[in-house]
Amino acid sequence: MNKNQVRKSFYTSLIVVIVLAIIGGGVFGLYAKHKKTTTFTASRNVLVSHNLRENERANSGQDQMTQADLNMMKTYQDVAEDTKVAQTTHKLLPKKLRHRYSSHDLGGIISAKTNDQSLVLKISAHTSRPNDAKVIANTSARAFKQVLPQEQPGAGHVSLLGKATNQSVESHSHPSIKKYGLVGIVLGGLAGIVISVGYVTIRNMK
Image 1: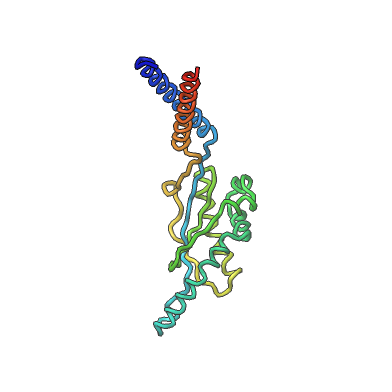
Image 2: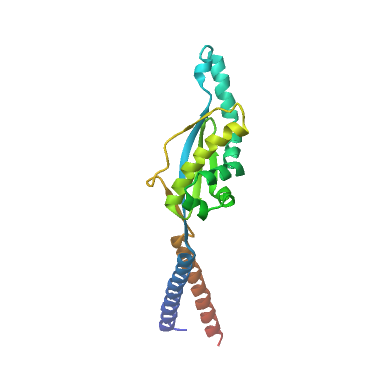
């Protein structure tokens, strides 16, 4: 194979790799766009604690009560994700949303999270509609305030913090079109390399 043939094979292979990379990126990107779903998450924080004024005569009493509340936060998280909170949320929702979501649906929509050494519980709602997520998050926080004293007598007082708003709703899209497109480019490029190498090898064997 002379220099001209080598040069021709190189540029031909390069074109094949580029074309297949573009095709791969396009196909994977279109697939991701077709499968793309967006989930909206709204959250409302609640503070669970005992009235420290009741124990203000002794600092040790305050410390013990605060530590007791901290130790119960994981339990409060479980209560917030319990079916009873979902059922109560369903009862408190506007009529339109009660028809759209069952209490069973709400059980999968509502979640709760707490951080170590914090008396704040974050209650969230995840739906495909931003306004629904906002309303459910705010309503589930109210439901939690009602249910906790029933499920955990002696639990700390629940204070509802700032409401979820349209501006605070977060969105998460899956799958990522950019990531799928990049994967398609890589796979298409690799396919182009394999095809080019195979073609050159077979050609040289003749």
